[in-house]
Image (cartoon, rainbow, N blue to C red; front, side, top):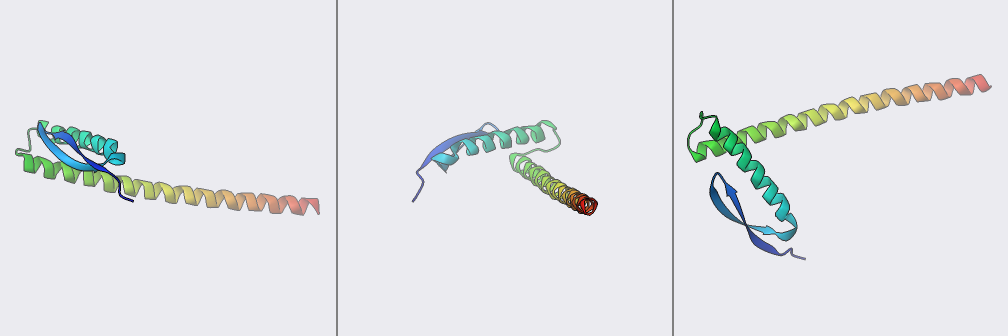
Length: 104
């Protein structure tokens, strides 16, 4: 079953782009375009990068860098939580074992 697509107009750095998009992904596309526009304006407004192509590349690199850092942080957090859960499980098992020994 195919999802119906329709053109969506987004504005990035004062330029309009028409993009074919499935209806159920329209809000996500608009949100992504808004985010990209914001980030590109931030890079442009530093005054250190000139030219739309360079602004786009620098913005893409910044977003990729943030994405990789977020992924790494999530992996570290997941590892930490897993370690902590294993510690708690061992404590619970020891406590149950000690309680059973006291009952006997």
